Image 1 (cartoon, rainbow, N blue to C red):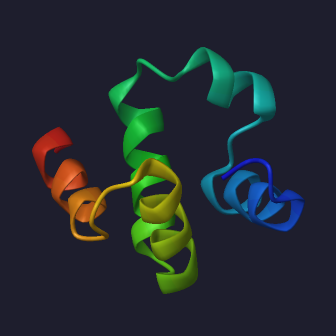
Image 2: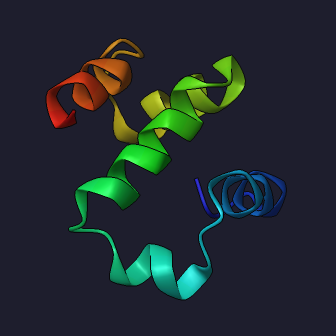
Length: 68
């Protein structure tokens, strides 16, 4: 997802994360939740992430529900 500079900029802007906070927070439930919320909030982002991860699009919001 971060390979697409436009999408990466939107992710950081909408979540309030910095690149360092994102990198350092990969094991943090709040950071993971923010990223999953970002992906679930836009169909194009959701489909791109699901494709990159080779999962069904429904798996991303389901992962968010499990995290909550």
